[in-house]
Image (tube, rainbow, N blue to C red; front, side, top):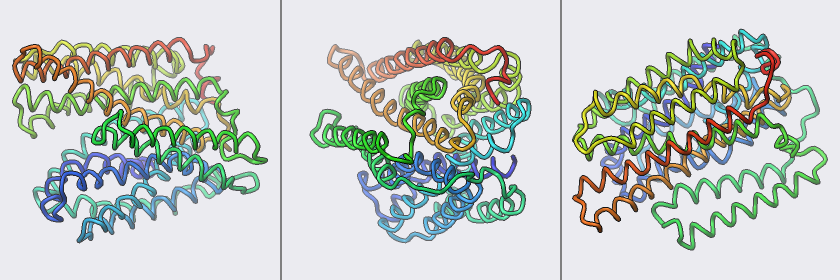
Length: 463
């Protein structure tokens, strides 16, 4: 469990650690604003496009084998990123790193579900996994600052190399050879694999490029239309394939479908909140970047502690449905508090109460969401289910950030046109986005709390 979580932590860290070093990378490799975005976007594009395929490859060729392959690819790509001396080389290496990260991320959850089959063990294991995912973002921001300030930006990538080598060796030695091994003939549906990966690549690219090109521009609408068309082709291929990559019956699994929708709504609200809350504290309240980073620590710590302890006990006592609904409802209340933040707020009076509620809500609700997604799925399809819910998280987060950031900007512009001052308009735009985020999270709470199967005991849910 520790080894698998260390591998997952590498992926979580990489999402946040790079952001801190972007100014240094820009200065050293002479990026402009448009090309600098691709240091992040190349990773996210490939990562999002290959999550589903990565999980399915684990089902077909063995989760242990595919996990080790993804880990090796991620580690080698990290080395290439750390040694990069040109813009193009770094962007290409980041794309390969995203491919390895997608495989590791989608298969690690499947390995945990397959290795821990007893109800109590699985619940505790998922609590540890949630603890790692929750605390990783906070660690990434602090580690990125320390490595970039103390050494240089190359070390945010090079630090993955020794860790990756150790994790690979320990996984090779410790993971049972039967862990998630395929128990059926290996047949890859090439048409389904190509079409669903292309559809996800188009959708992710349209999303990350939407703010720059405009959401009503021809390029954005064309990319979204192409993504829908290719996804339609994928559904047609799967409905006729003898051994489909994604059996369409998967989407008839009630808990998987509902948990994936909840994941998409929840990540849409949280990605936007994290981004806009940082802007609110820095641009409206006048916090320094270090103060902004410190302000996020309590929410991350609370989230991590609740994921590790209380969440597991609640799932054992009540199953997944009620903790999921209650956790998301608490999180929506935290977002609602942010929607009431004043123009001249303080850390203790205006920020910490909402942060605390968000931390408690996310700490309680994150694990049940993942467990609900995986509960109905047999071991032979656990990688696919993991890929589906992880893809929902990523697409929801990217869409939510793009749409809610645009909403904040539009509402702020409207307030400025109505005569509001600059800071007042900024704060008003952020408050509007926080209010919408609270409504989105409340909708996810209702869907998860009322829509998941009513079960008599957690054991029937988890085994």
